[in-house]
Image (cartoon, rainbow, N blue to C red; front, side, top):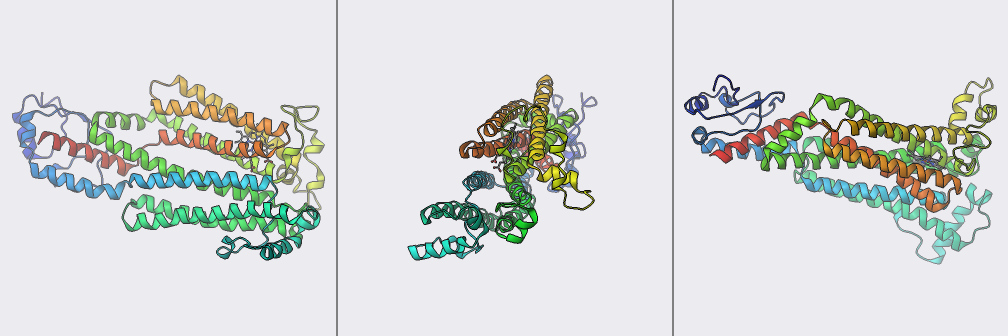
Amino acid sequence: MLSKTRFFFTKNSFVLKSLAQSRGCRLSIASGFKLKNFNFWPNTMKSSRFYSTTSISAEGAAKISESAAAAAATAVKNETKKVISNKIVAYWLMGTSGLVFGIVVLGGLTRLTESGLSITEWKPVTGAIPPLNEKEWEEEFEKYKNSPEFKQLNSHITLEEFKFIFSMEWGHRLMGRGIGMFFILPALFFWKTGRFSPHITRRVIGLTGLLGLQGAIGWWMVKSGLDEEQLAARKSKPTVSQYRLTTHLGAAFLMYLGVLWTAFEILNENKLVKQAQRAPEIAKDVMAKLTNPSLKPVRVLATGLLVLAFATAMSGGMVAGLDAGLIYNTFPHMGDDYIPSASELMDPVYARKEDKSDMVWRNLLENPTTVQLVHRIFATTTFFAILAAHSYVNRRKAFIPKPVTRSMHGVMGAVTLQVALGITTLIYLVPISLGAAHQAGALVLLTACLAFSAKLKKPRPEVISYINTVMKNQLLKAKV
Ligand code: HEM
C-alpha cells in the first residue's frame, strides 16, 4: 500500500513513521503545483507537492501535533494579508467602477447636448463651486461669449439656455472630482490599515495615476475646442478634436476596466480561499480546471475579444468626435452600395502634405465617411468573432468550467444588443437617448468580455501556493 502511494509529508520522519504504522492511510498527491514562498513549515515538513484530497487515518492524524497545527494556522493568517486583499476592497472598487460607468454616460450626455465647451477655464478646486447668484452667472456667460462656440454656433442662446449647458458640464466635472475623492480617500485608509496586498497596492497606485491623468486629458480635450488656432488648423467648426475625445473616452474605459478587473480578481481569490477552507475538494477541482493547459486557447480568445471590443469602442469614439453618425443613415448599405465610392473614402482634400503622402491615414481618421465605415467593419468583425467564440466555447463544455460558458452567453447577448443599438442610433440620426444608450452598451459589452476573461484567469502562483497552504492547514485542523 505504502509503496504504491506518493506521500505528502515525505520528508518528515515523524509523520513517515506514523504513516508506516498506519495501514489504512491514503494521502494521495496531485502533482503540478509547487509550494513556494511559504516557510512556516519546519524544514522537515516542507513539501514541493500539492496536497489533494485526502483521507488520513485517525491513527496517523493523531500523531500530528496540535502545536504544529496552531503554528500553521497563525502562519496562514499572517500570510493572508500578504497575498490576498480584503473583500471590502473589492466592493469599494466595484463602487468606483459603477461611478466611472455613470460618468461615462454623463460625459456622453454632455457631448450629445453640446454642453462640453460651456466652461472656458479649468480650476481644479474652486471650479467645484458653481455661480451662486445672477451676477456670477452673467460673468460666466460673458466668458462663454468670447468662445468660438458661442461666436460661430450659439450666438442666439439665452442666459437660461446657457445655464443648462453649463450645468451639464459642471455636473460632469463635479462627478469627476467626486470619483477622485471616492477613490483616493478610501485607498489611503485601506493602505494605512493593511487591507491591500502588495500586489493590489501597486495596482491601486497605477489606477490613481490614470485617474489624475484623466482629469488632465479632459481639459486638454476641451482646450482643443476653445482654441481658435487649433480649430483653424483642423478646418473644423468649434468642436473638440476627435483624437482627444477618443483619448478621453479610452482612458475612462481603461480606468473602468482596471478597477473592475482588480475587483474581480480579489473576489475570485477570496472565493477560492473560502472554498479551500470549507470544501478543499471543490477548491482543488476548480484549480485543476483553471490550470488545465487546454484552457490556454480559450484564454487567448478571451483576451482577443476584449481587445477587439475595445478597439471597436475607440473607433466609435472617432465616429462620435466627427459627428460621423449624421451621415449615411442606412444599414447595411451606405448610400447606393455597401461601401461608398473609393474617391469618397480616400478624398485628397483630407491630406495636409503637399505630396499627399498622409492621405490614407488622414482619411481613415478624419474623413467622416471613412471613419464610419471603419466603425462598421470593426463592429461587424467583433460581432462575428464573438459568434464564432460562442460556438467554440459551447462545443468544448467538457473541459471549460461552467461559469466560463455562462459568461460567454453574456458576451453574446451584450454584443447583439450593442449592434442593434448602434444600427438604431445611426438610422435615427443619433438622438440623445440612443446615443447615450449605445455608449453605455459599449461598456456593458466590455464588462461582459472582462467577466469572461476573469472567469478564465489562472490564480497567481502565490495564490496557488497560499491555497495549498490553507488546505494543508485545514487537514491538520480536522485531524488533530
Ligand atoms: C461591437 C459593436 C459596437 C461597439 C462596441 C460600439 C461602440 C461605440 C462607441 C463607444 C461609440 C462612442 C459613443 C460616444 O462617445 O458617444 C460609438 C459611436 C457610434 N456607433 Fe457604435 N459600436 C458598435 C456597433 C455599432 C454599429 C453596428 C453601428 C451602426 C452601423 C454603430 C454606430 C455608431 C454611431 C452612429 C456612433 C456615433 C454616435 C454619437 O455620435 O454619439 N455602432 N460606438
